[in-house]
Length: 321
Length: 263
Ligand SMILES: Cc1cc2nc3c(=O)[nH]c(=O)nc-3n(C[C@H](O)[C@H](O)[C@H](O)COP(=O)(O)OP(=O)(O)OC[C@H]3O[C@@H](n4cnc5c(N)ncnc54)[C@H](O)[C@@H]3O)c2cc1C
Image (cartoon, rainbow over all chains, first blue to last red; front, side, top):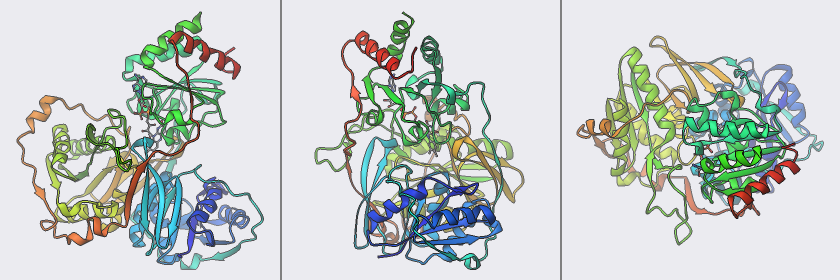
C-alpha cells in the first residue's frame, strides 16, 4: 500500500479544520497506513502550524520557502511534485484551494484524481472505492479509483470524524531544500476583501433565506414582506446574488457569509454543501421546497413540500395576525 | 485574442427530479431534460465580452455525442464564432483525464491564447480545466470571477476564494481559466437566435482526426470509474409536515417561537 500524505491548509498560523479530518479518511483507506502531514509556507506562521500538527500526525513534512508564503497552487504543486514519492496518495481539501491544485497535481504526478469525496467505502488492493455526489447533491455515487500509481483525492470538509488533538509526538522532517525550482507562470498579487453590505445577516436570529425557487426578481418582495412581518432578515443562496437580485453580503455559504441564527428558513433552496457550509451553530432549519426529493430535506429539522410563491404570502398573513 | 471555451451538455438540475432506474445502479435517463452546464454560459459570455473589447474569435468545443451539438449551437447563438464537436465511440467511458487528453489534442491543432472552462459541471469535480492546463504546461486559475486583458503577454484574473474574498493573480499567456458563476450576466438566447445559427457547419472530429490512440482516452484507459448511483442512508431527515396550509403555518409559527426565532 502506498504512503498517504495529507496537505494541511492554513492561514495566520492556524491549520484549517480539515487537518483534523484527514486521519479518519486515511484510516478508511488503509487502517495500517502511517499518514504524513505536509505543511508548506514560510517563517513563524509555518512553524506554528508544523508544531500543532506534530500533535496530530506521527510524521510532519515541512517545506519552508518565501515563495510559499501565500499558497499559490502552481508553486505548491511544484514543491509537492519535488518532495512526494511518485505513487503517493495525496489528500487535499475540496475547497477553492484544492480545486485549484488537485487536477494539475494529479497530472504532474501521473496519478489518478478523484474530487469531493464525502466517504470512503473500501480500498481493495489498489482499487479505492469512494462515495461522491453529483448533480448538486441530488444523487450519490460510488466511484472506483485505481491508486496503483498514486492518487490525488480532495476531501469534502465535515465529512469525516475529526481527530482528538492527542500529543502524537510527531517527528518533523524538513524538506525545504528539496522543493526545487519554484519559479512559475502564475503570480499571486493580493487578496481583495469582500465588500461589506448594508445589512449584516450574521447578526440575525431568524433568517428567511431564498434560493432559485423564488424564480423571478419581482418575487423577492414576497420574501421581504414575510421577513418584515417576522422581524427577520432576508438572506439567500448564490444564484440570487449571481443574478444581481440581492447584494453579495446577503449570500449564505462557503463563498459568502457564515450565519448562526436560531432559526433558518430555507425557501426554495436545494441544500448544496456549499450553501449549507455557511449555516453554522446548529440552528433549527425549516425547509420549504416543491420537490419532495430535494437534498435540503435530509439536513433540515422540519420540511414542507409546497410552492414558496403560494406559501409565503399566506405565512405573512398568518404572522401579521 | 483566440479563445477556446470547453462546454458540456448536462442533465438540468432545475428541470429534473432525479430517480434511479429499476436496477438501482443508474439514473432513470428516459425523460431527463438536458441543457448546457450552468457555469459554461458564464465562460462563453466572458469570452464574447473579451473578444468584443480586444478582437479575435471565440470557438466552443465539446466532447460528446450527436446530441451535444445542440449545446454548441446554443453557445454559437450567444455569439461564439465557431463550434467543434469531438465525438468517437472510442471516447466513451473516458474519465476526467481522458476528456482532458482529447481536448488537449484539439488545442494543439489551433492557436489559442486563452482557454476557458466552467468551474465545474454535473459531476461537481471541477477537474478538466486544471488537468488540461497541466498537460499543456500552461498556467491555470480556477473559480475565476474577474478577467482583465491588458496586452498579449499576460492576463490579470480574480479568483473567488472562501468568504467571498477575491484572490488577484497574474498569469502568462496562453493560459487556462475555469470560470465561476456571477462573473457576468450571460446574454439571453431566444429561439430566433438559435434559428440563425441552425445552418452553420459544426465539424465533427474523432480519435484519428485528432491523432489520438483510442486506447489512451476511453473506457480502457480510465482509472476513475463510476460504479453505481445509490440512495444514501442519511438517517431520519426532516420531519415532514402535512395537512392544510393553515395548519402547517400554525405549527411552524409555534416552532419558530419555541426555538427563540419569534417573540
Ligand atoms: C466553489 C463554489 C462555491 C459556492 N459557494 C456557494 C455559496 O456560498 N452559497 C450558495 O448558496 N451556493 C454556493 N455555490 C453554488 C452551489 O453549488 C449551488 O449551485 C447553489 O447553492 C444552488 O442554489 P439554490 O439551492 O438556490 O438553487 P437550486 O439548486 O437550483 O435549487 C432550487 C430549489 O428550489 C426548488 N424550487 C423551485 N421552484 C420552487 C418553488 N416555486 N417553490 C418551492 N421550491 C421551489 C427546487 O426544487 C430546488 O430544490 C458554490 C458553488 C461553487 C462551485
